[in-house]
Length: 444
Image (cartoon, rainbow, N blue to C red; front, side, top):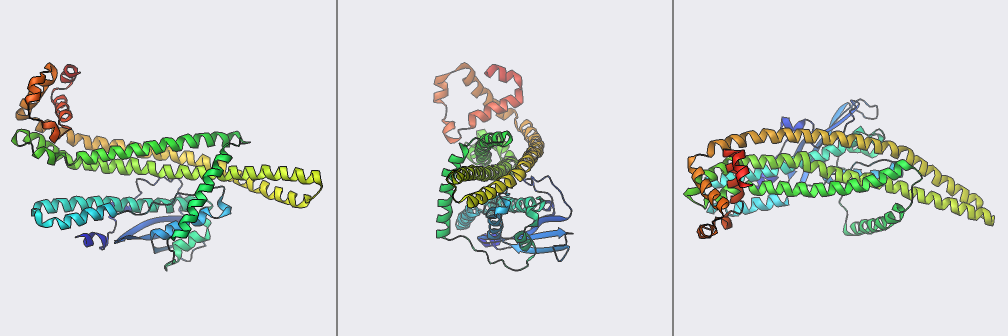
């Protein structure tokens, strides 16, 4: 069964070929359109079919497709970062590496325990794991497509030769992952960059616009990071509530109605978690990475400013000593040109980043609210149907104990809350649904 998931073709359905929920790019240009039309999972690798439509003269054909792997996306991203010509631009963040380890582990355990399950239980768990796997797969495809769309929409990056090779060359690019030595080099580079960033951050910017952006981006990045962590906790909470019906089954016949209620809402909770993951968590993670890319842009500009100021000081010393003046002037002019070039493009990049960011959050939050309302309606209807007389008897008993604080009777009751810690909340919630504000006022 695991091989059926990992090795079989996992083509995207028609509804998945439209704009991605995490596609946050606002610029549309018909001269170059890029999307991922199909994708195939092969054990620890995902092969993406990158489809391109273009009327630009740089390409030999107007429409073509190539197959690319994750490492080739990383190669393209790194080529942008390492190119000094792009120092004044926000480089679109690289897509995260596909991670199917958790799903594979669950599938393996399911396969090992197949003999101890009924056919219905096995089929049900298999379908749930396949749905989980497919959700991760779609997210992976979406993040890789967003990266390509951002590059294709950028007025400068779209002209890059490596990008054209990535899109058009129909053979393997022979890109390999970084070895241990290269990873260690990257680690030390990041350490040096962090230390240098502290020094650069302490330098007062000569332009109020960039000084304001530097302060804002630092605060914004931290806020998005915190919001992303909290959204992950919220989604994990939804996912942990979805199998609650299984726990309630052990309470026996007395809680049958409550158990049936949660069994019917379980799938809805899972869909809510999936929607929040796609519309909110993925968006926050994307802008966590893109805000870091914007901070990197300001770091490069700050570094250029420091180099320019140091070159001015070196020129003053050379003139005072009347030694190596020509060399100092040349160095000062190079630093000045680099700083001005970065500043010119960086200002527009940051303005576009703000426009794109605001529109993306507005779009996704509106869509998330609509989905939450859509899912809330069947939950409400299910709760109204299943709060029948049998369940009300139990709720009245618990409400009596709560309101009158009969501790002795409460302590003599079965310790149900060790079996299901959320049961008290469930009971109170259903009483509110049945009786409305009257119970809320009594309880509060």
